[in-house]
Image (cartoon, rainbow, N blue to C red):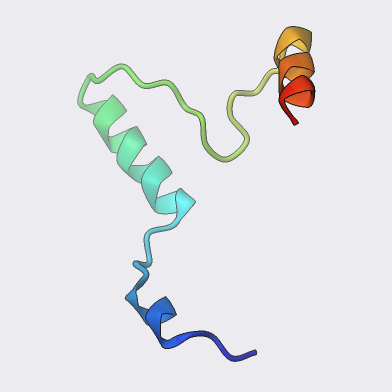
Length: 56
């Protein structure tokens, strides 16, 4: 697969790196709300699902 040359300008930060940074901030006493990889770990409320479907 051939990519556009400008693709090389993208950074390499991954979701895992972001999570590691968030965990480090939490270790420093910062309050964190995780919304990445598998978070939150509860089902989406029905009203949110319905609103998303209606907006689509």
